[in-house]
Length: 147
Image (cartoon, rainbow, N blue to C red; front, side):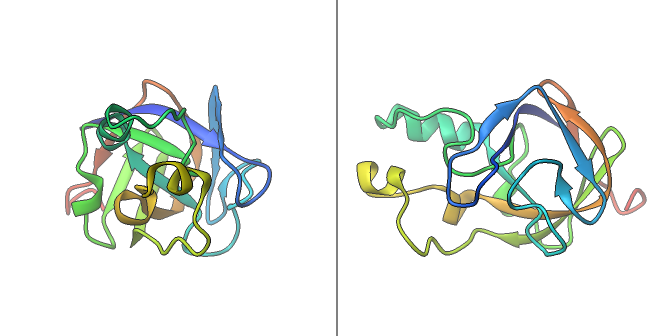
């Protein structure tokens, strides 16, 4: 079981996301108000809280959403979840569709630090069932019986 540490959105692609009090996850679309929402396989991105904290410990001055992540999760080893894994948070059901992504044009973090963690540590999901998510909510990996 994991814990949601932040939910973030951005109005435009290619920009850092900002924390919101609560995200409205819409089935087969993504998070309401987020530029990456739509009918595709990368509707919602997740990144590990511990990975972000390790990056900060190396001198990165970053806040929630700096890597373009929608959800920051503590307590789940996200990058080792196979594609097809399902996660639940309240009524929300997410399905992992991709692990990592190519960074086509190096972001500001890469320019400052020489690396960015989202391409290797971020995961992407689509929303199979919608609902609301906020900081402090529990998020779990579904067992075979639940999925």
